[in-house]
Image 1 (cartoon, one colour):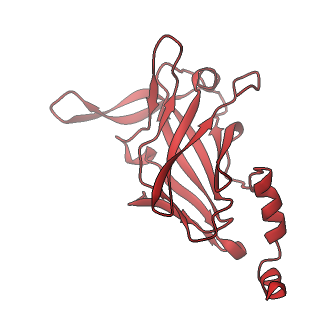
Image 2 (tube, rainbow, N blue to C red):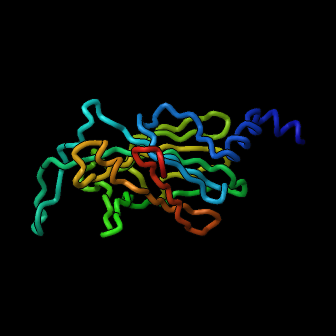
Image 3 (cartoon, rainbow, N blue to C red):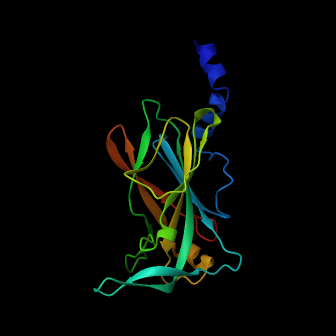
Amino acid sequence: EDDKQKSASPNLDLYCRMAERNVKPPCSLEGSAFMGGASLDGLVSGWVSLMERSNGETSRSVMLNRGNEGKRCYGPIPVIELRILLQNTGYSKGVISFPEQQFAVDASTRRKGEKMMEVCSDERFKKRVLHIEKRGGEVVSQSKSLGQDMCSLGLFEYAILSVHIHARGCSTAAKFCNRAKKVQLLVSINGTTRPLVIPFYSMNGQP
């Protein structure tokens, strides 16, 4: 039976070694700038990268809600796209689910708390699952907006999300990298929802 399991999943040993070292799986959809990574008790891991535009600027034209009258119009705001790579690295008794949630990047300082919120007012910038890779190499590509759960992953399966953040006060990606401290996402494991906190590296390479 052991031989049968090995033949069905020839890369199982490799995945186990990668999980032990919290090594992220290769994915061509990651951003150009790596922000940070973390693991939750060896069961699930997340890595965050940033999609940087060629000129480094963040200003985008976004559909916004104006005032209390429900008026909507386009306006320029600073926007950063984060790519979040998620992998079930150690839970074999079922799937790990990632419930629908609103993301926020913590930009707090010692003097005040601050959060940069996800862009939700414009369909073009709503978070999406770009790619899900199942065991055995099966690939599931998604382009639609998310529903009740963003995705569910069996052991060693991984997915990558695209999340756009309103980078308030950050005219360039470099300024965002200097101010952003961490992002938190909720993970459902065996019916229990737990936070996975991913700290970001600063410009000098320190978390």
